[in-house]
Amino acid sequence: MVSNNQLFHLFLFLCFFQITCLHAQLCTQEQTSALLQFKQQFSFNNDADYGYCDSVGILSYPKMESWKEGSDCCSWDGVECDNKTSQVIGLDLSCSWLNGTIHPNSTIFHYFPHLQSLNLAFNYFGMSPISSEFSRFTRLTHLNLSGFSFSGKVPIEVSFLSKLVSLDLSNNYDLRLEEPGFELLVQNLTKVRELNLCSVNISSVVSNSLLNLTSLTHLDLSSCGLLGKFPDEILHLPHLNKLIIWDNLALTGYFPEFINSSSPLQYLDLSVTNFSGELPDSIGNLKSLKMLDASYCKFYGSIPTSLGNLTEMTDLDIGYNNFTGMLPSSLSNLGNLVLLRVDSNSFSGPFPSLGANLTKLVELDLSNNQLRGPLPSQIIGLPNLTWLSLGDNLINGTIPSWVFSLPALDYFNLSNNKLTGHVKEFKSTHLTVVDLSNNNLHGRFPSSTFKLVNLSSLLLSSNNFNGELDMLCHAISLQILVLSSNSFNGSIPQCLGNFSIYLSVLDLQKNNFSDIIPDTFVKENSFETINLDSNGFEGANTKIFRELQNATSARPWT
View 1 (tube, helix red, strand yellow):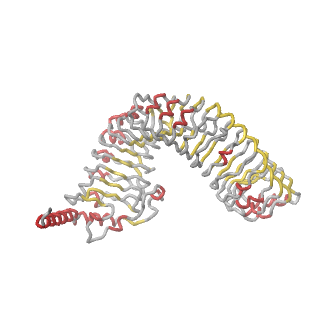
View 2 (cartoon, one colour):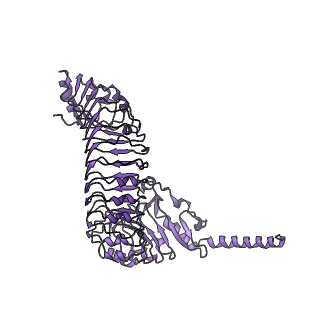
View 3 (cartoon, one colour):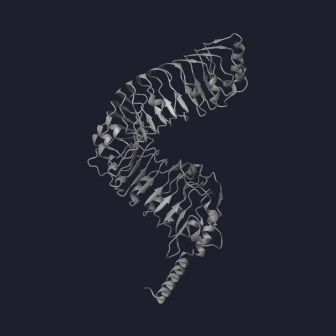
């Protein structure tokens, strides 16, 4: 049993502890005044981040509005204080609507020697230079100046912040890190774990000094204008989790061998570079890999079967390369795949059997290859598939029922194949793009498709579809309608001339339309390209043709 005396002493202790903590949290008057002066340098504009914060789900609001004279600055939004000393050790003003310039004589540089973390990302600082005064924060471990705010040369003094664990200067498109700045940065920041220089203009050979950053977990050098050969040993850094180097067209490199399966690498983006060579069979040892983007490179050879060992993979994009051979059936082992793109290569052989394991797929793109034969008749369990692109192959036979049954389908492209038969009713009501052009399909196109209110592009040219178009008046979002070289007949609905403010491309040539062209076509429309040639219109349409050419910006039909 606890005595009353013990309870009383416990109560006194808790009161003393609370008073001590509250006292320790009180911000010094000097730092309070300095922060309020810093606040006066800015106005608040909710467009200061160009909408980036909202687009990635980061709450955007003016944090400084909570900064008021007479209140404890340690309680202010975005301010962190040390519990023992009351010194300000952290400022997070990211996505805070700040609009102004950080001057070298700003109070922020002179009254916060204990600052360890500073985040000013995604505000607007007038594209001003980054001040060399940032080097005053000698205890800084985290510095984030990302987001459309700064320009000019990155001061060499930033490399003096030797305690930095995280440095983010990304998305400052007019920022330059000139020699020897990049080399100094890499040599001095030996403790850095996260280094993000995306879109900073470096325009130099990748420094081998990067290999000394043995604590590195995240490296982003995308769109930096890097030159020469990328040191493949970087992929073997012991803690590297994410490597992003896309959009460096003059950067060469290749996949190294991965001897063991202990690599922590999860995200690897080499796209839009000059990387080449074959994928090694040892790539199957990257057991933790979740995302691989090697698109728009110069890789060649066949895909190793071992790629099917990477069962953690969610995104695989190897499009726009020179890969050959058959797609390995082991890809069906990747049950976590959300995106699979192998388009614009030279894959051949029968259409791959993807099996029923890829139930999480959202995007599937096998277009522009040499895949042949019919589509599998039985594929089930693709409830999330929104993007299906199989165009520009040698696929024949009929379109199987499972294709039309996909409930979430948005983008559908089977153009430039050898498909025959009828098109059935689509289950999805989300379709925005349907492209079945250049096949041997025939019969009446399902009227329900024309009634989809989100349908923006419908391309059915060079088939043998027939029927009338009255149902088109429901497709109020159409921007592109190409029905040329078919057997559509009847009158052209008047609604096509004025029902959509978006319709810019209309190609109905080489069909069996008759009667007259509706006079709505010459009144209000947004046509940029129009072709009604080779139909059975009456002679009175000559005047309409001429007026249509004069009244719109439409390209003349030939």
